[in-house]
Amino acid sequence: MRLIRFLILLLLPVFLIAQNEPVIEVGSFNIEWFPCKEDGQMMQKYGINLRNPPRGNPTDVPALFQLLKELDIELLGVVEIVDTDLFARKAKEYLGPQYEFVYAPSKSSQKVGFLYDSSVLELKEAPQVYMDVALNPDSWLRPALRGYFKYKPAGFDFHAIIVHLKAAPSGWKIRKKQWQALEKIITDLKENSGDKDIILMGDFNNVSRLGYKEFLPRIDKWNFYWATHELLEDSLVTNYWQPDYTKQYIQGSLIDQIFISDDAKFEMIPNSVKVGGVCAEGRKSYEGPHLPEFYEKISDHCPVFVSFKADIDND
Picture 1 (cartoon, helix red, strand yellow):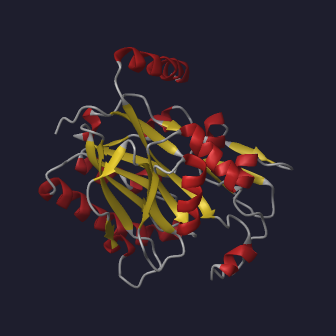
Picture 2 (tube, helix red, strand yellow; picture 1 turned 90 degrees about the vertical axis):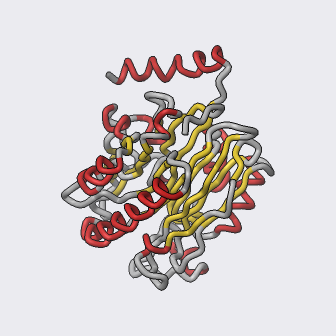
């Protein structure tokens, strides 16, 4: 199965170029506490006082943006952005002045937002912040953010929603309420927005004993396609975590997801879901003394993304 999918992905760009069909990529990336990463002293400068502050290194900013430049993703939902101004400035510095960054203001020290190539995509209206996903206006949980994007000059237009749900196995009770809030958002968009092309993505932290069953009943109810299931079929992961912080050992899981409405699936290119960074190597775990540079310098999560036909819109 992996060989077949590899051959499809290898030949797909050639086929699309031959057909002269423009393509855009849409994805999600948890950029671990940018720009602090595991620098506890830097966190304190941003007013972040964790009970057990990490003692590692900050984000390797040049390495991060070199990765993003190589991936060349037109729309990237990002989470865990601590310094939004720095992120926006560095995006323009490393990727070009056409790159814009919008984010959801909130009390959380970790912001969610969209980084997009404005020479390719137009943000059709002001982004909408959904504080319902944070459960109350004064919450330290992260809200969801929606942007309505359109391929320039005329083509695929769609709603993109980026989220970062409550972490930890014990957080399932809160995540369940956040999923209930998301259901109201999705239902309203389908019934009232005039465009049923919806891409829901982000870090869903599906780490309870339920695993993927945290979201599958709702996704099935909405008739959404679990796009990142393609990674699961190929035994790929989207992040690495330490079961024991006293040991130099990390293991992978798949908690960064992309869900696509049945209408938007018409524009999705089949078998085009990819994962970048160290996760693309396909390893389930790593053991010290030296962990992967990506994990040490950029993030404990990897970017996940999917391709869409850009010049058509079937809704």
